[in-house]
Every structure is written in C-alpha cells, then in structure tokens.
Image (cartoon, protein in one colour):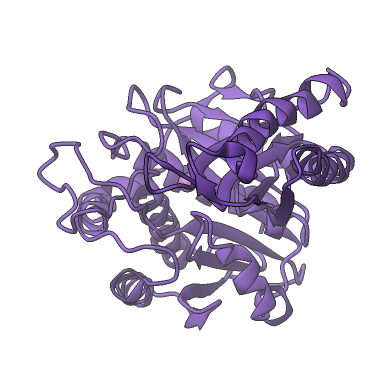
Length: 388
Ligand code: NI
C-alpha cells in the first residue's frame, strides 16, 4: 500500500518534465512543441512503438509485456492541451505564453502517463500490450473523437480503456470514481433573434429583439425547472448576449450563446426539442424571428460498471482501502474521454490534487506530489488487468 519504489528514481525528471510543459502551454490541436516533447520522452523511456500525428497532434505509444499469452491489450489515456487563460499562479514555472495556461492539470496528466511508460517499459511485468494515448484538444476540440476517427482503436485495438483526471481539494494520495454517468453531455447553443431595427424613439416602427431576448432567457429556464423529471439533472446556461451598438438605435438582430448539459441522452432529446419550440415560439409572439443552432458536442461520460471496480481495486492497492471513493458525486462538467468510453469498456478515475484553486482558475497549478501516486496507479492497473 504505497507508491511504486521505482518511481522515486524518476520523480525529479517527471517533475521537471511537467513544469517545462507548464511553462510552455499550447492550445487545442496546436501542440507542436508538446507533442514533440512527449514523443521524445516516450522514445527515451523505451516504448516499442511511438506514433505521432494521430488525430492531428495525438501521440500513441505501445509497450509489449514479457509475454502475450492472453492476447489482451489495455489503453491508458492522458490529455495534453492547455486553456486560453492568463496565468496568475505566481509559480516560477508559470506560463511564458501570455493568455495560455495549463489550468486543468493536463501537464500533470501527461507527466503521470509518461512515468507509467518509463515503469512499464522497464519492468515489462505484464502479459499483453499496453497502448498509451496522449490526446490533443480535450478542452472543447473533441480531440478524443479526432483520434478515434483517425483509426485509434482500429489500429491499436484494446479490450479496456482507462482515463485519469486530477481533482482539486481531494487529498493527495486519494482517488475517486463512480460507475455509470459521472459527467454531463456538453452541447452548444447559438440563438439568433431577428427583429426590425430602427430609431430608439420610435419602437412602434421597429421590432425590438432586446425584449425578445429578455423573455427568452427567462423562459428557457422553465424547460429544466418545469418540463423534466426533477430527479433528472440538466442545466441551460446562457453565457453571452451580443447586439446593438448605439444608445439610440434599436438593433436589427441579437445573438445569444450558451451551453446545455445533462446526464441522460433521453433528456437531451427532450431539451433540444423544447428549446427549438421556445426560440421559434417566443420570437414569433413578438413578431420577430428566432433561429436556434443546437450542436451536440461531448456525450455523457459513462463509466462501465465492471471496469470502474477494476480501476478502484488498482487504486486501493496503491492508496489503501479507505482512500478510494467509489461513489463520487456526479457533475455536469464535460469530459472528452466520453467518446472513448462509448467505444471501449473502461473508466475514468479522479486523483487527488490536494488543496488547490479550482480547475480553469488562473491560480490553479497541478500538484507535483500527485505524480508518484498517479504513476503507481497506472502501473498497478496494468499489473492487475494484464497479469503474468
Ligand atoms: Ni481537464
């Protein structure tokens, strides 16, 4: 019940690697330096194959065990991209790229999976094949889907897939997961309201889109509050309003954008249909035109029952019974790993980041103390799922 011994020999290297990525964050698919550094480090670790350019800038590494009598393979996945945030962590390794920041800890996830590569390539103490997946564009770019569409699971078929994400304010050395839907679907909405512009002193000669928007913003909240089962979870957040340029002009058009999230696909169909009705109907009631563009972005992240238990058992072997939560509360945050879980049975595990600013906060930083725990979890999971 502790972290793997071998990790300590590589910890300084892994921390330096993490801080280097942190200081030079890159966004979405635009990861030339990050993916090159990951590729170089995976080759140095002794992986059998390292392939880059999967899903644009994704990297895949393959490590074969001492034997392969089972013919089984498991996939371990990390994300690599940063966020468009101006960093305010004050750390010596803070971002050198103004307006870009590793505010979600993907630098730490990458370092932990690299650590696992080092340990697994050294020991080879497993039967079968491990496929390490470093994906781009987790933060809204559907990089997991891009890798799948680029043949990820066709070229490197795996029997099980596992992901890991850090969790602020869960103590370092603790883990948390849950079976079933753990994170929400992520959809984007774009609403255009078209009225008739005119002089602000003569509203009777115009159709003002501003009060249409005001009514609509109020009304859409009743879709979640009044038309779905209160025991179901769904949220509609209108997050931007654009329209109008002058104090004395009624604008012609107005645009609203937002996000819709839920934990069940049936609720998703319902909310989309109701939003469509509300936008068209409310605009029509004012004599205006309303148009909804609803795009389904990330699916619900659904942990598979059995694999969640496998993940929890591996975490328990590392962290000890009592340090692994199996009924982590659900959230409506999105996770690109959902695409992979829709293809292959698997589970997402959360690893404690200790006391820290929240994810996506300008003062956030991944906690290097979690690295040894994460590397050990990955290696233990491989030992348990691909036993010699
Ligand atoms: Ni993240």
